[in-house]
Length: 182
Image 1 (tube, rainbow, N blue to C red):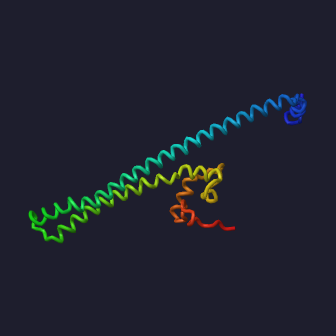
Image 2: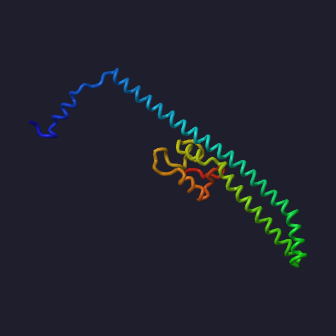
Image 3: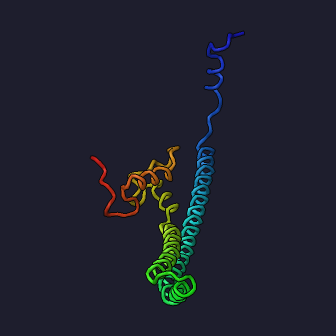
């Protein structure tokens, strides 16, 4: 009887039959089909992401236009119709001076206009397609590719791109992206 670790198992493992060429090719075919299947699955997932991102951008653009319309409507018509009625009411009923009545209605109209512009800016951000740009950057494509971690990295691309945006490095604006040091 031999003691463990003296090479008896190693000798038995070396004597086992090795697969022949046909078996090796069959295993290679199975592995390559599995790899191709994984590639197809990843391609479908990426296509779904791009489609969803484009759909979000289209919807966001429509909402942006709607809120711009609201901003214009409240900015112009509120000043012309509602403001004149409020000014007359404040001057006649509340005995306010004309200048105070005009200023107060102007401030109200500007507040509504500011709210609509703020909402339009929020929805307009969705048209930048950030999720697709982050995934393309992870794959090495696009203007953010030099600044994001590699595809196998545990670091989040979202955090890296958000940090770039927070530092004002011009993420998304090609003329403002800093050059990479050599």
